[in-house]
Length: 208
Image (tube, rainbow, N blue to C red; front, top):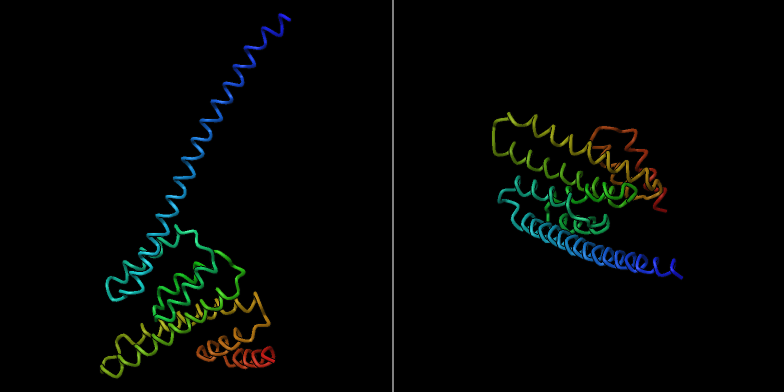
């Protein structure tokens, strides 16, 4: 009986201790959740602000906008399929460079996402076409060919990136005809006749 009476206050003390610890834990947990939600909301709000700025004002400080956009992409937790959707919308608005940042981030977040790799490759192919058009306009409006080599290098770099991502999409899903169609165009522009013919044949075979 005496042992019971001696132990009873001890048990009460233990219960009080754990009750107090539980309250402190729940308080800290609640603060952490609130802070985490606030941080996520801030990151997404800042992301959307820069998204709209870049999409609607490409001529105003594009370099700084691209840099800020990249930083925000690193902070946001948007999944790959959401980034792909946004990238496609940017392509439709002719915001090629910002679309590429978004699509490449989608590929990073899901390396096995065929459509993310496919659209990234397609967008680099589109960029190469835009660069070719700019080069042609420069040559029409100027007798100087001083920047011609730089323009040609930019075009080849874009085609190389297009090839990289389209081959990645092909490796993820070798039976998708559209990937082989785009690859055939890239190989042709790079002067790779053998792979051009092979990709065209595969595109025809898999489209059946």
